[in-house]
Amino acid sequence: MLTAADYFDLDSTALAGLFADTDYVWQAVARIEPWIERRFAAGLQPGHDGAVVARSAVIGPGPVYIGPGTVVGPGACIEGPAIIGAGCEIRHGALLRPNTILGDGAVVGHASETKNALLLEQAAAPHFAYVGDSILGQRVNLGAGTKLSNVGITSRAGPDAPRRHILLHCVGVTYDSGLTKLGAIIGDDVETGCNCVTNPGVLIGPRTLVYALTSLAAGCYPADHIIKLRQTQRRIVRRR
Image 1 (cartoon, rainbow, N blue to C red):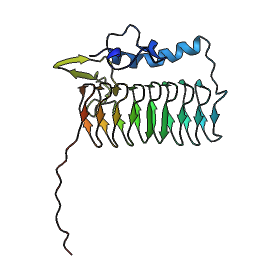
Image 2: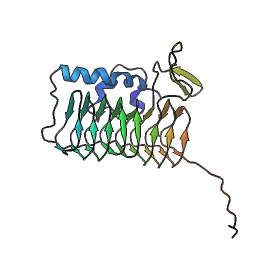
Image 3: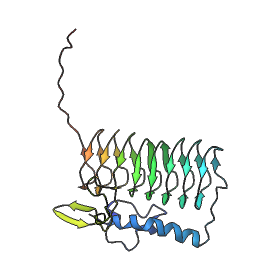
Image 4: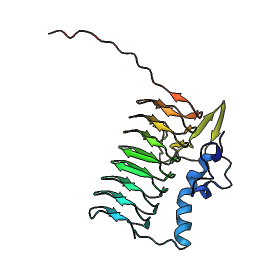
């Protein structure tokens, strides 16, 4: 349950090569940067012919390829290296930091930020999202304000203490990811409600729904489930 095929339909994505010969799905996170470098070294030319890019958008520094039919809105910023597929939407005020890959039809919306991130085809982070050191499967939709935390609050690096690796806890087994930063691996067709937070090292199986305001602890969450949050509320009469 930890291979790329457990989370993504590799037969239907043009980005399946990122997962080739991996034992565990999270190993692809470390491949994002070198994969982009190889594409440009193999002849992919930076540019945005056929795309619609607002005058106030900022492209670069660093090489950025934007596919035909993609729309980049006013005030958006795409820092290279980055590869943006065809028919994507980069909406007003979005920030794509280095080493972002968007599959065809993906969406990064207003005030959303990506960094060392892979969004497969038609994945969407439409509103106020953070996607760092993470992978979103096909047709994933992050509700407004969803944050994929990629660094533990107690794992700050010091002068004599390097940052620790993110550990993954799955079915009673703990795995060393080998990564000092790891957000979430989110399978195809997963949806999160508004203002969800995933802690570093979360894996969510395909087609699972996560209710609004949920904070997911590090670990593996199965496919085809609904993760609900139940709050205790109290109402009292307001005195005047």
